[in-house]
Length: 460
Ligand SMILES: *Cc1c(COP(=O)(O)O)cnc(C)c1O
Image 1 (cartoon, helix red, strand yellow):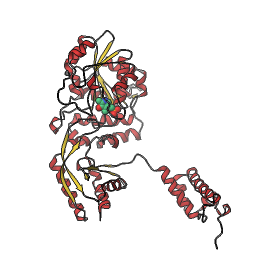
Image 2 (cartoon, rainbow, N blue to C red):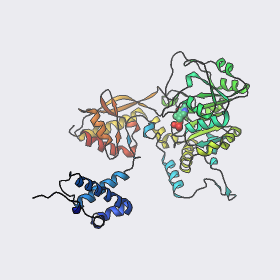
Image 3 (cartoon, rainbow, N blue to C red):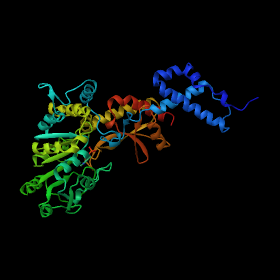
Image 4 (cartoon, rainbow, N blue to C red):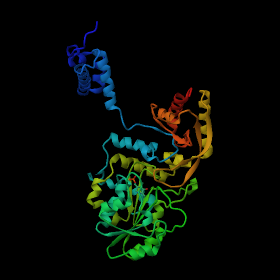
């Protein structure tokens, strides 16, 4: 005989708190959150009973177990490590550039201890946080001064606000670009209070187009790198040194949103050449802006380089305080820049390891993985393919790679099962097949990747 469950049959909070399994919850989650969890489960039970939906009263064991799930769910981290098997090296959605070991160590040290963030050891007085990456950047780029902010979007906005507010800025129609994540050059110009003066056409802008647009109200010419798309065919844009000569003859500035932050020439790695940061400064650019986490291979940052006079003007602008970088970023950035000076950037910085990795080396890894999969009864094929730089860098260029192709009846389901792995695997679907590109899989994640592939594809 069953009786209808009644509210009286539900255990009290006090009783649940004394339940043997609750001890673990209290230790792991603390009292207040644990009580909230138990209350929330009890409330659900009460509601079900009142509405006549309960067939039986939940046991204390069940209530505590459900509270455990509730707590795990509330505290589950949303920023989790993943395995990037897409072959897109700078995947903006996957956090762009992984850091070098020494950049990670520097970040740890800055997090663990107090630091000289804004403190001068010699004088015992207040110092400036702007000094940290400054000297390294000067040496690497040939600039007089540098200023690091939160990201390149902030760097461009700050540069325009501090140097061009209320004045005209000339830009080619071919460069009125949207970089992704809603960063649109025209919108940033509008926000900065600079007046946009468009010249030329989408595919062709000549030096005289710029010259004709200069008025007494002009503050600068802005060049924005086409970082995520390419105009090919019948195109013209004046070289940076031509624009610098024109700007300086008219007492206005040449500003360059270089974007990628490439300090090295990428051509030797089989990628399409683009002006590096030192190239831009050598051509006469007055202030250059670029990201820290694209081709520089460091943490998220926006970096401005230029003359002392202009960089100081930027540093003193009220917005500079709002977009300044934090100590963890400065630590990681300085350590990353050091690799360029000591000459071990190709070995030490993951981005450059991936960019410079030879096809033969990738193929070797692919063959090993194929063998491991075969030992587990999974048939995988190797296929010539392409990796991409991504992250809005080097549009239209790719690197030859060797892909692992695994057949499955339901490709979408296989991809989603891989994403559900302990360390989620982000794969690529190409022509209806699931593919994995060894180029972007970090060495310490190889085992997790293979475990996930075996688990998902076994018997599939
Ligand atoms: C990537 C990029 C930006 C935005 O940089 P973030 O560091 O992502 O804020 C701006 N301009 C150009 C040309 C870019 O390539």
